[in-house]
Length: 411
Ligand code: C2O
Ligand code: CU
Ligand code: CU
Image (cartoon, rainbow, N blue to C red; front, side):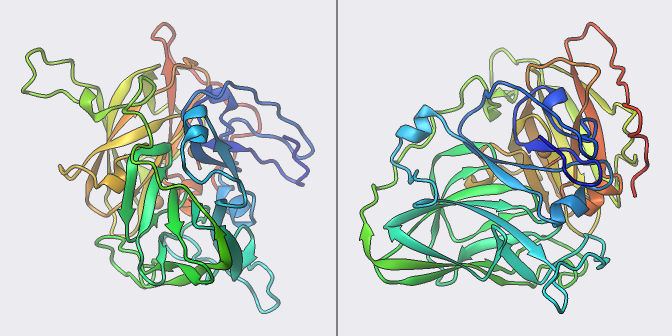
């Protein structure tokens, strides 16, 4: 990575399982004019991941200006399935970001936004306003990424026909799930397949999202809807295979399974996983503001844990964990809907509801380099709604060294 900006930045691999030193969080700063050469072995199922800057206290600004891209992971199972798989033809990456444009159609960089950050009134797909895509196949796969800094979308088709949800943040679902809409908060991804008939025009929209019991729906975007992408089907469409009934093999060793949860019915009760609690309030997690020099949690490498996360405000937050994927074990004691039951690294937190996340951590012990967990509403992250954890093999106490020059407070 070469940083040709006049200021420091970082490049974070969102959703990737990798050693903390390669993660591209705030500790891996690339100075202006500098370079960074991360290396790691890809070791996770096929998934729609992404990358974006993560400089301490400056992430919102860098992402808002458009520094974001997708990182598509493929594997033999995904490539060999009957899913649409031709990049740019029937497999389309869609990076959705909202912007505030001024009278000259330039990016407005001075808007203050509100409690959740800046909500723009112009929606772009892959940097294009009022985007149109010509479709030449009966089915298309849309890889949706909410790359916005604050806005949550509820994607669906204008004529209400269902979408087949096939993948979430960390990879394919066990089978396609027909859904009317897909709610994505900042940082989340979903792959959906839609079917078209020759010559038709379909609009991918974002409908007014149900954000839960928030105080001021109009202020936080819950009343907003947008046209996102016009899909224009050719008069002759190439045949697409039927969607396979089974997409992913049942959980492999590399991912958490809710079956690991202790059951009282079992004859031999396995040791209950460690549970940690996280309360998001204002701009803090567990009443603490992000500190680059403080390790908040020490986790044994390779462990499976339950992280219970609650949004204590009446406005939106979400929760993202670096370096791992999780499964939602329960929401307020209830099992997640099929759309939320797949592998995730980011989840929207409806106010006052308790989310139990079952997280399988990577096998990269390194007590000197932390990973982050945080709210992915980037204003909140920048203002301190973030914490750090290290993976250890238990032999050395965690002691992180903060590189010189990174001790600036959040702006
Ligand atoms: Cu999308 Cu901490 O990152
Ligand atoms: Cu991340
Ligand atoms: Cu937040």
